[in-house]
Length: 126
Image 1 (cartoon, rainbow, N blue to C red):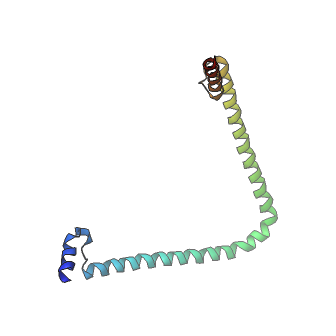
Image 2: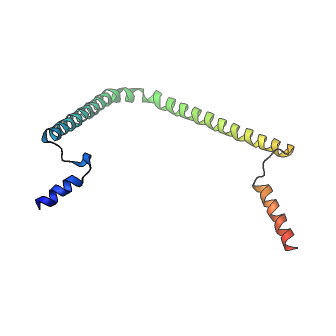
């Protein structure tokens, strides 16, 4: 059994060799330190969020008659500007396509392709 174990260790790649105990301890200590630090930062962030919410809630309640309509107005203005811009881009692209189509500079599209296909079928059936 010991021979099989030693053969198995010899066939392993160098990075798969068993690590010394000191190296494993250092890795574990590093992992615990990093994990603990992140856990502390997470707790501080949660505490700060709760404190900020506790302080901001009365202000939001007091100013809500002004803030809610202001937020709704800003949202509607933004949505209107976005829709207007989108419709403008769509209109310009349609006008550009119409111009290219009328001047004969358009690439063969779906309509032209289907016309060609019908004419090919008609020629084949004759």
